[in-house]
Image 1 (cartoon, rainbow, N blue to C red):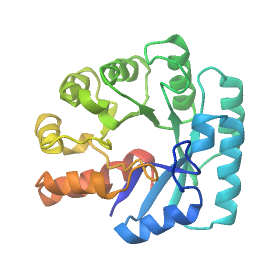
Image 2: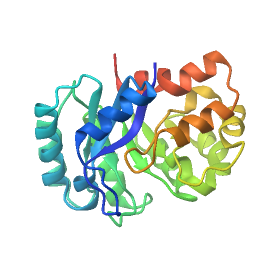
Image 3: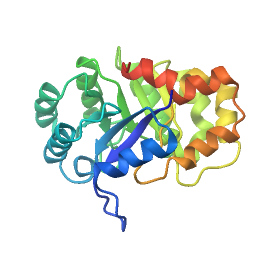
Length: 242
């Protein structure tokens, strides 16, 4: 089973023609991805309320059982986050997405802690954008919020060598490796350092083609149990997907 735990729906602000849900389903078909969990680009880059609502309508029109959603929340507006979390629930909505940089909210801030606490109160894991040393800050946050489960999106990007330290600080953080500039040997090194049970596959589609991360995982020469865990088993358990 392949579960893409980091994907998106909707038009980007880049010069790209990626907007319709048909783009997502075409990628699922092409790469044999069984489940994809998406967040609305409008919610991340512009407005969580309108973006989450737009994805809600899209799900109603596109009844593809392979597609699930993240509720995007902005730590600066938890009143709206509470309203969206009350309405957007399982089984279609399986987690929370927070973009650290677009919201201007550092992982170490009190606002981010309250946002992760809110997601945790709803029993939801959080996919968090990490880029650089803040991957370690996210581990500290996970350790400080009882019951939290966090996924470090991009696993720190060029700071991926800090993952062993992040894993040491908390057992409630998982690492997702999509990156537009992947470095050779990264996946194998991380698995050797922290174990295959701490990684989940994500593509960053539709911004990045899934072949980028799938190729990096293929090049890591994982054992069959390691590959099964990274590509789907870990995310299935973490996100409560059947």
